[in-house]
Length: 427
Image 1: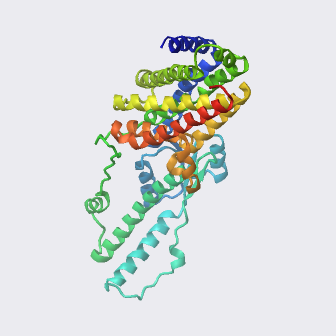
Image 2 (image 1 turned 60 degrees about the horizontal axis):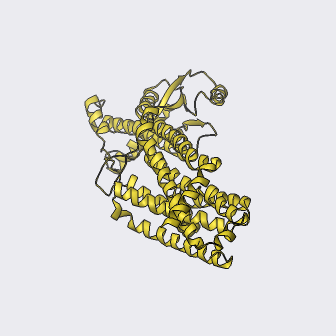
Image 3 (image 1 turned 90 degrees about the vertical axis):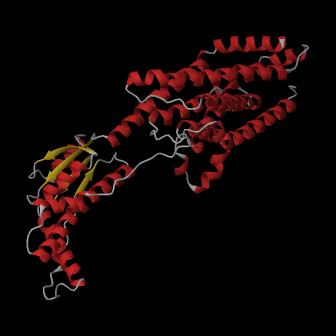
């Protein structure tokens, strides 16, 4: 025990001298957690509040154009700036290049006329099918085609975001057209205009959507940007101790520490165990620091507060994730021949494992060909275990199936490290 404690004190002294390693281990996760959370939270707010800037040019003076404009306002996705109807498309596009808005909607001048013609045509066909009208008054179908609504968008707008905007516009257009069809049917059947009260009853009474996030605990709290990002970048920072720990192992190989240890009544496995305990404490401290920032500092910065889930589950998951990160860093240090190799291979491999593990790209968005590779990444299982707690509100028993593969990968890394130590005659 005395040998182990002395070795731990030695590793702590070495660690405190590694200023660059300490920056990577503590400053980097704080910066990543704050910056990425702020960026993603602003995106969430842009989607959930009326902050998407839009230019709206209504060149139609009829009722349908006004109804469409009202429906777009009610969509709740946009901060709308009305544009003069006489303004040409080129000037509207120029305003978008100047970043006045990322989306622009142009309603054509004959929108109301075409909508009414189309609605009358649909009503006529419906009445004919009901046997309530003869087919003597056929209309020219070429005149009932509605000129499309023009949607200009800035090139920086992602395709998924454009699709959601298109969906909102199509819903608004459907509401306008349905109103006109109902008015036409009512007029043909009753030979008088449909009352406003009936119109509101037929159009306004929509089925509500009850949104509920899937939760293991039955909680209906919607996960925020902090719940997504803080655990992810904590895991990323844990594995980046390879810069400090891997380099420390390589330095000991190069400066003859291994040879001197062989002349002493001890075993290098004591030194390996010491490094594991020391740096496991570092990874736990990393998680504690970043989680504390999410709980107490984020609200004062205008970011959503991190809601800490089941404490025993978080503790166990953090310990296992930290042990896996430490084991991987030691393995890199054992097999690397120089400190440059250790830093380069370690950093690049962590980024690659983060990419295929779901930190940079969501796991559900991974192509089928990457699903098997994704499950080989320890960062994937770390992230899934944390998400099971932070996002799904689970307990320790709920993430056991994520912890077991992570333990298996850690034991394989430990075995590979032992084989490497024996091949190099270090133990």
